[in-house]
Image (cartoon, rainbow, N blue to C red; front, side):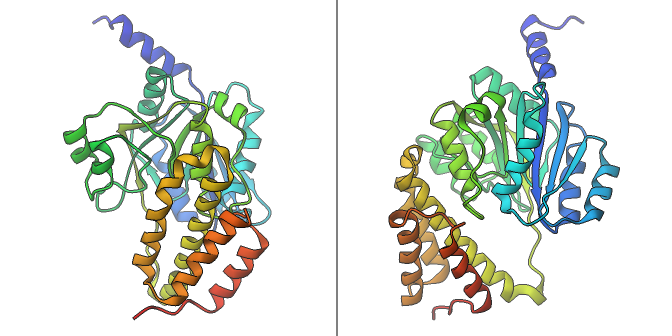
Length: 331
């Protein structure tokens, strides 16, 4: 049976795309191995570049045995997520045959066909950045991009499944301005003209800044029919208190970095109206005790007044102190 001309052209365009997957990981060998296994059927991927911030030689051996496309890079030290991604991108940019770069969290899992759907949508929408629906272990939408327009923005923030969203809002791609970095496909043109992720955010928010930077110049889109899981491992009981402290510090980094992006950077203005919601969520999780209010003020002061993201020496001093002495819980 003959293939319609339009369909044949789409397949040909997708087949011509060559993708480099970029993953930064740290001391999670089983988690990153799960991601690599999930990419086995993604034929457009030419190289899977794994930057190991934990410098674990067993990770190299394990991943290379899983997929011949793996290119392992020992970071030599913990460079953080942004620093690891930059190292990976720098290593593959020299290959001019690579047309797209697929930035992935190590605890993501790719559904079959995700890459093809993202590429197809990018070509049809003339977009230079695309993200799928991300859902958690319960099947609910999480790590959503934004903002969407009208009813779609309301629906994506509810505890819905991707199928629920599509049933209400349809499956057509939708323009976005920013996205978490769980699973982001970016064109070579966007990387070459907009630069690399920042390395001074330490953790949380470098993905929002980077996607906002790209979408300020090029179209970015959510592709509802493309899917990926986000499955971070649960905290072990023995480390629950340490995990609680770390989650608190991460949230503070999130506030500091997003405040810095929204106020200090010219492409961050579209995030400004979302800042009150970020701070309100912080208080909902940590209470309104004076200590929480004081810390929220510090995060705003660091990001907005001092114009320092969370990679600054000031924030890292706070991080060290908090990991040794956790914030008091409100009653």
